Image 1 (cartoon, helix red, strand yellow):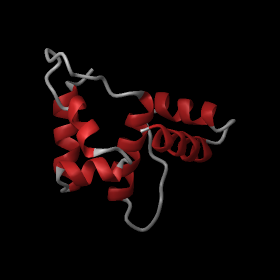
Image 2 (cartoon, helix red, strand yellow; image 1 turned 180 degrees about the vertical axis):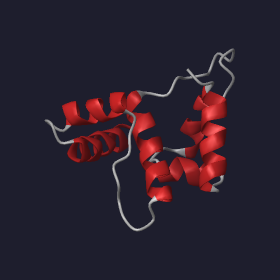
Image 3 (cartoon, helix red, strand yellow; image 1 turned 90 degrees about the horizontal axis):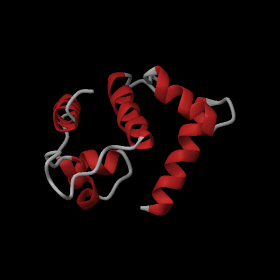
Image 4 (cartoon, one colour; image 1 turned 135 degrees about the horizontal axis):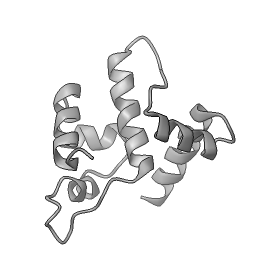
Length: 104
């Protein structure tokens, strides 16, 4: 798997956002988001969850398709979203993000 720091940096650059804006775009507290950008050797490092990756890839898709919302996810994340949404990936993302925001 691609190094998480490189992955996040490349998307941040692609979207033209600050770290705080990036965190806000995916519905995460900017301070919490920092632990995902630390080196893997750090004691505070945390691996991105599948739901976080869904939010990140959705932000990326929305940036590429500024005319409207578009579901563009890697197949494994799309399957996860469909499972959460009872077969409807878009609903799964809405439910997952709503639940994530209520717990963060």
